[in-house]
Image 1: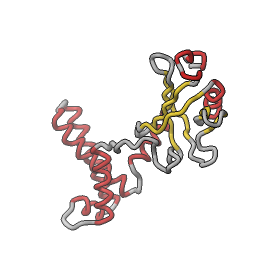
Image 2: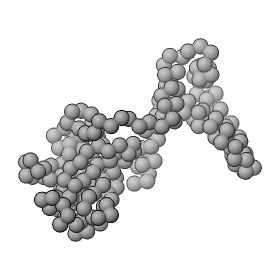
Image 3: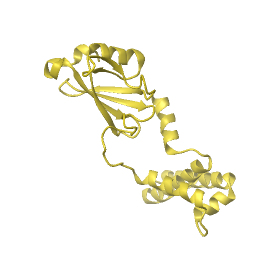
Image 4: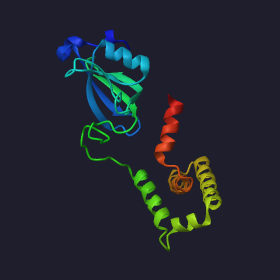
Length: 199
């Protein structure tokens, strides 16, 4: 994709609107504009650079704050007049210090909610909690449970028993989340590693 692929005749003032999306959470972070020079600088540096309409010059996001937007992927829309950039933000994107310039409600799947619940269990260690008992027994017991549930999941998969596989895979995922917490690792750490490998 080159700047010549863009249909600037459809864009106001000949500037391409650019939507920035968090490559991991998929949250929309901000909207900016690019001309050819901003686009080419973004490609060359791997950091999002806009054309500032108010200042009339190039502006690399984060050049003063250090809150850069590192490019992961770029997509041109079907009409060729809008660019979507998936990026890894370094710090907050908005000048207000918030993650996004848009105040949309946070979207969080159940697995992340479960992970946070496990973290609270680790902090509070409530009595009569199975999770607490695992943390008390330590990393060897937790790792053993992950291994056991992985084997049981594999057996059900080989047997072709879908419902039992879902049951065992759920046990595996829960114990894996406990192990992550024990190792002071969170889901974002795993996602970032996978994203690094993918890129």
